[in-house]
Structure formats: C-alpha cells, structure tokens
Amino acid sequence: MSKSVIKTIAFALAGLLIVGALVAVVIVFSKKTDRPDYTQDGLVMKREATIRLADPSGVRFTATISPELKKEVEEDENKSFCMAIAPISYFMKVDKGETYKETDWIKALEEESLNPLIVEGGSLAMKTTPDGTVIEHCINGAITSILYNNTNLQFLGIAFVKTVDGENVSYRYASFPEGVSYKDCSYSYAYLAAQCLNEYVLNNVYYSKSDLDLLEFIINKSVDLANGLAEEEMTDDDSKYTVTLSETEKNLKIDEEFTLKVTIKEGVKTPIWWRSSDPNVATVNNGVITAKNNGTATILVVVSGTIHRCTVTVGETVTGSNAEATV
Image 1 (cartoon, rainbow, N blue to C red):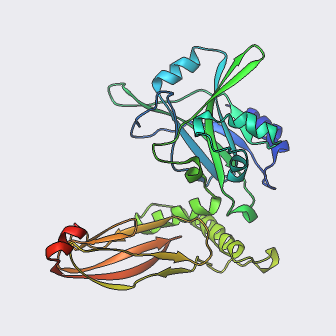
Image 2 (image 1 turned 180 degrees about the vertical axis):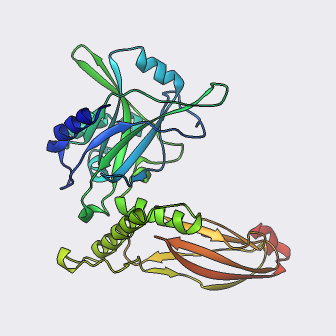
Image 3 (image 1 turned 135 degrees about the vertical axis):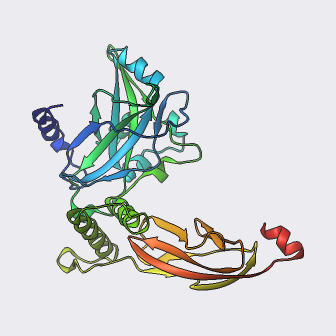
C-alpha cells in the first residue's frame, strides 16, 4: 500500500474520532512463530494487543487467520477481512448478555449511533517453515496517535469477515481463546507501555532511548490521571503506580503454598509480572508461591518496570494431612 493511499485512509477516518483521539487506522500483517488451534470459523483474536512505538504510535490488535479461511475469502470477491476498534465501553453498552458469536456487533453499534473505526481489505502475508508449510496468517488493526490524556482508556479490537450479497451484508466475527471473554481483551495505551517496561527490566528486551522516554512519559501521565490530577498539575517526574505487597518476608515448609497479594493504589488495569530468583527453592505462578526445597528465594513482582520483592525462606517438609492438602 502506498503512502498516498495510507494518508487518504487516515483522512477519511478523521471524522470518526474516538473520545478526542487523533486516529489513523491501517491493516497490516505480521509473522508469528506458532500456529494456534483454529476454531471452525478460522478467525481467532489474540488475547494480547501490542503497543506501536513507531510514529504515529498507538495500540495494535491481532487476529489469526487459518489457511482455509484465507483461501475462502480470497476466492470470493464478496468477502473481505475487516477489523473494528473502539473503547470497550462501546461494546459493553450493546452487550445484551448473549454469547459473543451470537451478537451482531456492527449492527448493534450502529443502532446505538456508536461509530467504531473500521478498516477492510488488504492482502495477507504468511509465515512458513523452511519446507514451505504455512504456519499462520495474521491481520492487525491499529489505532494510532491516541492523545496522551487518554492513556488509561481501554480499547477493544475485533476482527470479522464481511460478506456482501446484493443489498444484504453479513458478518462473521472472530472468536476468542477458550475461556477468555472479549472484556479480557481490551487494552489501554498505559497497560501496554507498562508491559514494555516489564520486558525491558525482566527479559532485557531492547528499547531505544527515545522509546524508553516515550514509555516512561506514558506511565507518568497514566499515574497522574489515575490520581485525578488536572492537566496543569501533571508532571513527568518518574511517577509510578503505588504498589503494596501483602508480605515482604515469608517462611514456608516444603510443599506449602501461599498467595502473595498485590495492591495497586490507583486501581488501574496494569500487567503484573512475576519471577522467582530460584525456582528450585520456590516457584511463583500468578502470585501463588509454592515451596520446593530448603533455601531462600526472592519473589520479584514487576509493575511498570519497577521491581518489588518478597523474600521466601523454605524449611522443613509439611507432614501428615497438611502435606496432602498443599500438594
């Protein structure tokens, strides 16, 4: 797609500004490493969105497309891949309690005069193995240049196949991973920025100086907004979410478990990453710590790139009925 076409699309969508955001929307396709278990419909939303740090920056949502569905759409000129992106509040407003796939989201949003950003069309790229076997096709919809004063606003992107039959238009919506609600798949700019900072600290993922400055800026604004500060009171002074752990030290017996609770004063949705300094002594899974062997381990709790610690000391084995209850 040429730059001129992209600019044309951006200007055409300018009238659909969402909550004061300056928006440009494009559909792009990315390469992934693992093919998921496709549903029968062959269109599945990823659970996680990603942050777009290129200029313009924003939030990008991803859906995987099975080879079978790709072929079906490509062979039918009346079908096209689309994605709709809007604040999660739009979708919740028209949610009538039906199953996700039984809800005609586009029609429901139109009836409430709610205008999501919709883009359709584009050619698919594919990821293959060295022998030419197709692994996965992906479609990404991005909402970009979200104003910084909307950093805590959660957006949802849903993919669908549009079919035009004369005057009749129908939609086939993407499903979500088993056990995941569409509400679990909405993300804010600040949430994704916090996730990037966690990656930087825990996994040594490289980010340029300018990217790190942008991520920190987003977090600062997010915290100020969560604290109810007015625009003129906001600062860029390394603001962080106020995090409190239920324990900073804990003694356990082998095979004993306990849940380390994390309280974020601001009450915003932000990713919490966990890691044990020594999994042979104690493991951690989403806050649940399990003692394995005698010794000491530090449980790292990472929020927006800041590490909080709880020291776990493991001693003698739990015996009797307690051992059975905690295994």
